[in-house]
Structure formats: C-alpha cells, structure tokens
Length: 258
Image 1 (cartoon, rainbow, N blue to C red):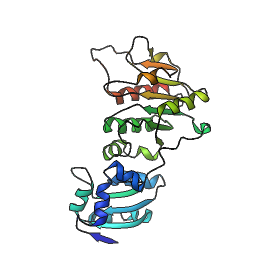
Image 2: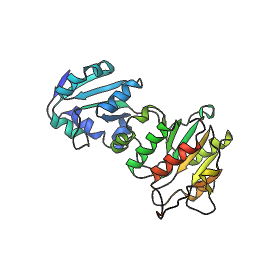
Image 3: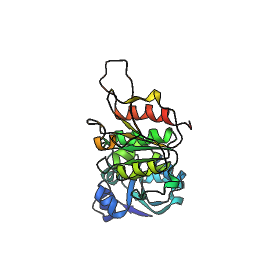
Image 4: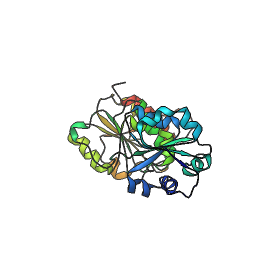
C-alpha cells in the first residue's frame, strides 16, 4: 500500500481530474466518494480499480481492500483535494464507467424505462435515477444535453442506484423508435389541456416515460413521437411541480409490476 501526502503527486492529480467529464471519458473511470457508494459498488459485484482512504478509514473498512487492485493511504488534505464535498468521509474509490452509449438489443427492452430530455440540474437527474431504482425500473436514458450522469453531483444524488439499473446516454428519438418496434408505449409529459391525465392510463409492464427540461419541458419533436402525453392534475395554486417530484409520481403510477 502506497502512502500519498502531496496534492502534487500524479495519482492525486489524476483523481482530481476525474471531476471533469472529459477525463472520465478519456480514462473510462469515475470516482466514488464516501463509504456508502463504495460499499454499494462492491455489494453489486463491481471491482474497485483503486481504493483511496485516510489511515483511520482504511483501518475501519479494511475489508474493502479485498475488492481493490490498488490501495492508497492519503492525508485528509489530499482527500479534500480530490473530492468536491465540503466534509469528505475519508474513503473513495475509482471504478470503471459502464458502456453508456451502446443501445441494447430490442429483446432486452423490458420493464419500465425513464428518458430524460435535456434535464440540466445534477440533483434532479440523480434523484430521478434513484426514484427509478425504487420504482423497479429497468433503466434510465439521458439525452446528450442533459447533466452528465456520472458527474460528482449526480453520483452523490443517485446514492448507489447506478449499480441497480441500466444507465445510457443517447439519442432519445432512436430509443423511441426502438420501443415502437416492440409495440411498447412511450409517454411524454407536458402542461397542456390536450394532454391526458396520468390517472387515465393503465399501468403497464414495458413502457418508456419521458421527462423534460426543468424550464422548457420536453422538446416538441419528441412530444410529436409519443404514444400519449401526460399531465398531473393539481388542485392547489402551484404553477408546476419539480421535475423529479413529477417523475416519481408517474413512475410509481405507471409500473404494473409494483
């Protein structure tokens, strides 16, 4: 086990660069910050490429070293440098990125799927992935103009749910076409009197639900391709619901397997 005390060490510099999308894609890796996320990774059968921790935390969670190729003991200063949290827990790990750009075979498009169209806020993206996990969804697909699904803030909001379902990034039009090929409904969402109340839709086993941008909603060209566009009736005076809250209501309503 190597001990690192300087933020100028090359390993430390590389871990710091994992906060950027460019370097994550270049290396095919990303950083997990905190015991819960590292433990979720190992519990789901993922191998740790590198385990990073302070002396105290490595001693407390010594069993994690069995899942790692390399282990590095670092100072609290180094740990603070490589993470973007105010008070890091003192344990982190580097793991491999899944292949998020490969569209699965149509035979595997089963269950509920959540599509995110230009959702910008990392907290919203992470919360919706976590809720999709809780609602028993098979996977989540984010458009190219959404927040990076493996960015630090999204990772923190997902709370390990990325290890429980499939995550993809891609062209939502292509995904909609693939669902239509297997005669699976694709539901859009919009604030429009012509949209259908979500209460009027029968829960199903295989379907896709699209949630749109926080301020602008779904793209019109995607709204034109859906099976139905849904809205959530509101009795109060609020103009709209947060996109993650809306997604949660709809996911639990639409999934027949709950």
